Length: 313
Image 1 (tube, one colour):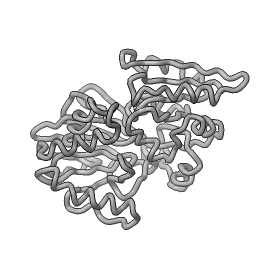
Image 2: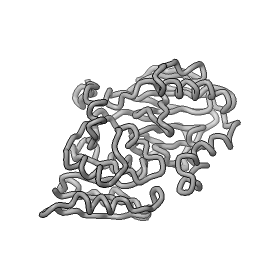
Image 3: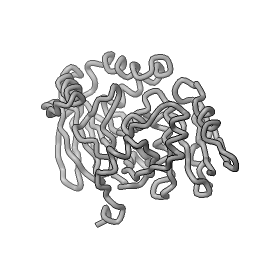
């Protein structure tokens, strides 16, 4: 095999598990090219020759994986999301192992599936996202959690949420596939993969191969008003499948535009952008090919993927 490893040195706890992965996967005659960045070097420049490799290993958090996935969209180059961040939500959703030797074995097994990718445009800049993007309360949580992620891990997000019980509220003008709606809320989420920290699912269905995005408006005047929805997600994990209550409005769409008054900060896959609404977004059906475990394959292979050609009709 000829593998390209993109290694984000600033992700997670800096334990260097990706080096164990390289030792575990290398066989006689293999070539493994390791390219590292601490954020100074743009990931895009590291992928210019990606087509000459059999696969790309994206080592870092979900933001790193999203950046790699966006550059490689619609190339059919298989990508391994190597969980080297703090939350590693994509690995959680895909039911992938965390241990380097198990991940090496998974790549050798060669099971892959094509998944949807989200694309968000703010001003003249576009970003890819694999889990979720949005604006408002979620962006504030990501921003406030960032200084503590390396020490506290996933608990940094929970702490940031508790520290901001009265987040900004805005009026939203939203277009879903050209259909206008208006709503008020603390934030808006665009969902591709549905599971977040602590194995909780924002929406009941986890459908990252259906050619659509979930669109979730976070209702309420304070963060406390979102507690019923949080309880619903916990019960959903236990198999009771309740509705998400009146504290969430949930839609689906292929293309989305959002204007917020007052404007809200934007985030994508946990990366705060420093930019604010308005934004537009769309789904790129089946745009990224990921290595999956047997469990992940069983979960998602039965879900009929929307083809790229069908999405244009």
